[in-house]
Amino acid sequence: MNRGRTAPVAVGVVGAAGAVGRAVVEELLRLGVGPVRAAVRRPPGRALPAGAELWPDPVEVTDARALAAFCAECRVVVNATGPVRAVGHRVAQAALAAGADLVDVNDTAELPERPPYERLLRWRTVVVGTGLMPGLAGLLPGLLGGMRGALTVRVGGLPHFPPAAARDFMDRLARPGGEVTAVWRGGRRVPGALAVERGVRLPYFPGAVTAIPYLTEEAVGVARRYGLDEVRWYTVFGGEGTRAVLDRYRAGLAPGPAVDVAAAELSRATLTDLAGRAPYQIVTCELDDRRSLVLTGTDSSALTGTAAAHAALALLDGVLPPGQLHFADLPDPGHVVRRIAEAPAVRELLLIDGPLADLPVEEGIL
Image (cartoon, rainbow, N blue to C red):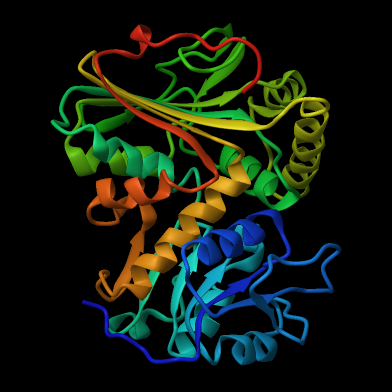
């Protein structure tokens, strides 16, 4: 097990003024974790949650000295900044060098460069991909039990993508490898096996939505972890403007500036789609026609922050071994999800004996 560390600050949150960072701080405080230290780049436009200790100096992820000073007295550091290719391993390097463990909402394992802190993983722990997807979406199938056959996962809803999240999403679409429209079947990726489903009605998703087959590394990890014959993984969007942007760019994105332009359009489109409507996020998992699961949440930032807070709690509890692991690979997923289900960001968690078709198709907006 991971060695405990005595430090005056339980958790430090980098990027605490953003939507995800605020959600991390709020959930940690709700769980009774403290002290919680908050790092921001500039004075926040609105007050941080009561109970958080605001670090007096600005903290930029590109400022190694400022990061080191912030991490120095923390047991666990949470990185709630992005996008992943801009932030890289900077926060993790500072946290581990200071003797703290690290939770990262980004999946830094997808970066091309090797982490500069590998030798420190003999003593410290890094949990990456602690968000909605990657993160909760990969953890939830573990609750279905009896994992064999075909698994279908749908993740999405009516989100707001802040610029960093939009950049990460469009960056993944730009990568080679045939992830869009691919399926995992018979132990390998099968490109082009699935079609985009437009204007469809799906159990528990309100109204007509677009479901894009999107085989992520997390989906492949789930398939391998449980020895599944087939995995179909969809990203679902309920907003018309968001669908239009994705349709325009889905056929291919050149790396670099083209991704930046697409990400800016996507972020604006999600805001337009939300005008007068409430955000929502839904994850559904269906194992053949035998077992199903539905999780509904308030929005993607809140769910990401909640997942990161519970990863930090697991580190504080000392239940994780040294090394680096993905949030979706945390031991005892049922225990983790039961605690997360009590968070304000989660509206409902259902486990069903049978197919999703037995559930109602929701009307209107959650």
